[in-house]
Amino acid sequence: MHPATRLYHRLIDCWNRHDATGYGDTFTDDGALVGFDGSTVDGREAVTAHLAEIFADHTPARYVTVVRETRRLSEGVYLVRAVAGMVPPGRTDLEPAANAVQSLVATDTGAGWRVVLFHNTPAAFHGRPEAAERLTAELREELRRTTTTPPE
Image (cartoon, rainbow, N blue to C red; front, side):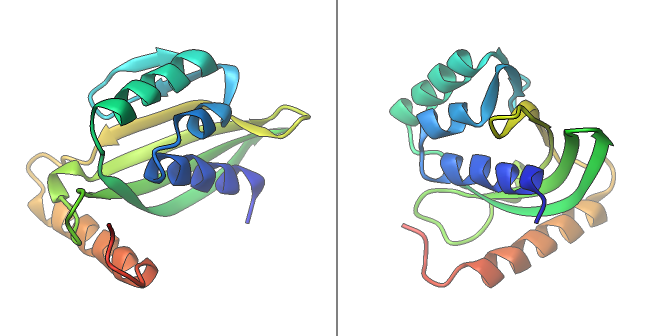
């Protein structure tokens, strides 16, 4: 697995563990986050603070993801494209309305791989319900494949 793909999985794992510090630590000092609602957060410290607020206020749903592509953009810069579903707290199935398409740009800083940009956008598929249903089915299969015990 490419280091940029591992970085993506680390970012998702930090979200699922509600680890704001770990999540922020995946970013470069000037990295940027574009959230599901379009909120933009610039800089590692701001990303960490933003996630700490989210995790302090409520327990967010956990991600189930499928990496679609890891592509070299230039020396030491990679794009990771993925899809994601979310399992709300106390539930064992996805909330299809929260399905998303994610993009991560990673760079090798010399001291490790870091996120330059993470972008998370709704997978609404306006006017194409069959596309939304296919994505939900794929993510449910990934959930079944990766879940050995019911989520907390």
